[in-house]
Image: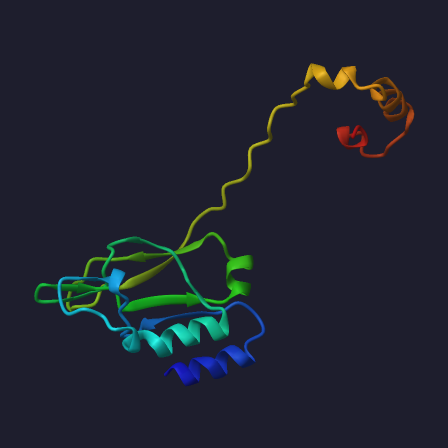
Length: 153
């Protein structure tokens, strides 16, 4: 399965997401149960390092699979750097399991928060700079089409 994902990664030009049961458990991803050995995760760690894939953050349950008293996170959502750059408002919700021991994963599209315009602030110490008046006069005497404060630097 990792070999197939390596092929996809080598051919994929844009953003992509791989979301599935990878059946890989790191020590921090298991509560109760047997200890995880480094050899068990070696191939997956190499895949992540070689491809630059990262896990998409999630909300909801911390574990995606339950077996009696053992809780593990084996269902993962991996994205490439192009995904992270173009779709930062997407996240994954880990839902409650229903008919399976696995928790369903739900891709969520959240509204991008628009950055509020910050109020104009003037620090009086700037006026004490020796070139302050010269810069202000030059900015005021320059005609600009956009008429914005960008002319004052």
